[in-house]
Length: 290
Image 1: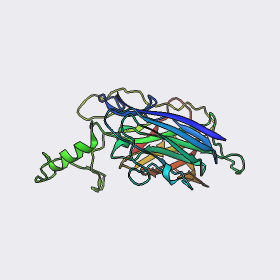
Image 2: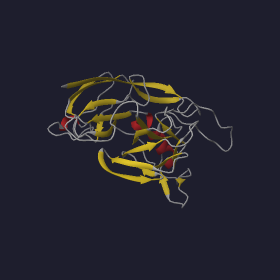
Image 3: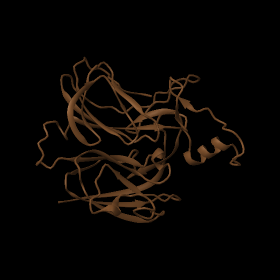
Image 4: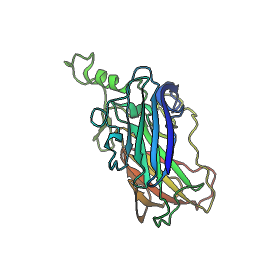
């Protein structure tokens, strides 16, 4: 069986966390890109069109074993030449292994601008998997560390070296964790879940930007596929009013259920957990912290 997809990559302007509008890279008009779902061992055909005005790009299929299809791995200048503006490419590969994966840009810092999306491979029926894999009780939560810089690559050089003359010292304050350790070369402004977040500033009134909503019912069991499309920051993930999450998969592999209050996820990692909604439901927040 063949699974066919068509993706248009183009520039757009949005306000992800309510701070200001800035340029992002959308896929089929969406930020983040749409969820791609296939069944294990299906032949996947993905048509990609670069409609950006100036940027070249490639797509990497993170977590997919490119057996016999190394040309589809999407690594610029190693497995392919980048797609120039106006060009198209067809990626062909087999959906293997099943689990929670992602696709993302593999040139520069385009992932920070939104060129990413979830890639979910469902067991084809031959595997005995007792946990839910799809349906109304399965959610996808893709995370991103968000900053308010229009062009992260240029900003990095400008902040690091002043006027690009590489003779001056650093001219910015790095983001540090509570112990004083350096987190990243970029300041952390806010975290996004499925492209939405809310910027909090101690010097201004907090905005009311809409957050992404997962609609759940009390006394039910749900699977959350958590994907970190972050660039540099790890996140600690927890659920308000629920002291127990049950991790059931890591980086696409099913594991023995492990109970925890929270977990830390790093860029590129995927963690699946089961949530039993045992509290009185009004609003319960899926929380991210550094």
